Image 1 (cartoon, rainbow, N blue to C red):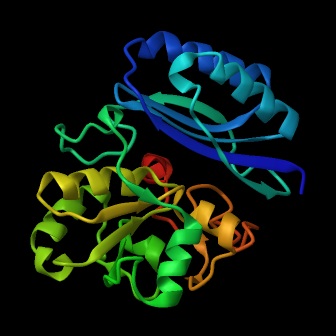
Image 2: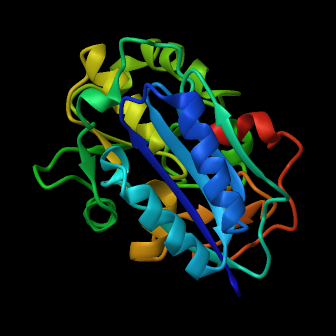
Image 3: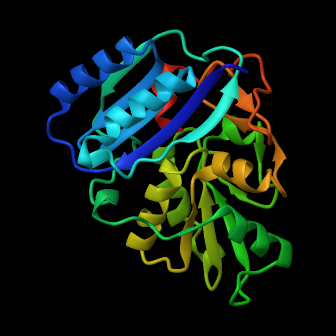
Length: 258
């Protein structure tokens, strides 16, 4: 497999969006990269594909800007680029929740890494002996492709529906440790901050999302594959493409949900 695919996000205040968009688009075109970059006042969310040398060159260029110095990408490989073109889009949010009081750039949500979550699942409780509830923050058509079988799945059609679902179901989480997860981490980070905002405690995000979990522990206790928002459709536990094309719902407008 000769194409490197990366995904990354960072919540950081950005106030020069039009100029930043032009610089990023020019750099990606110069390196012949394909994919999508989303920019918003709250940060950056990117999905890029190309030869490793070109990806490394872009990331080195990006890290020269101190606002993106801490941005780290998750990697996977494919035979061809799973994007047809290169786009840099300006958005109101890099992941749409429509709760403006939730501002992740003000402080990261608490997290657990893949190895810790696997240990908790293997032993049946967290390190303090509390029951662990997994919360899938993704859309229904994503969970149909694969999920932790014991996770709460609200069958939502978009991320904006999650707050209402949680508000109607808070009793489920009382006195338990909650770990939210999503594809790459961006949704569960906002979800945890929202849960904290409404008074829930002992809530965590899975660091790096499902893709990092696959990378670090091989998808232990996971059932199925992981839906991705590009032409691969999904990746298996080895991060190899597993579907010929994504479902119809995964159009360009929904790339921000990764």
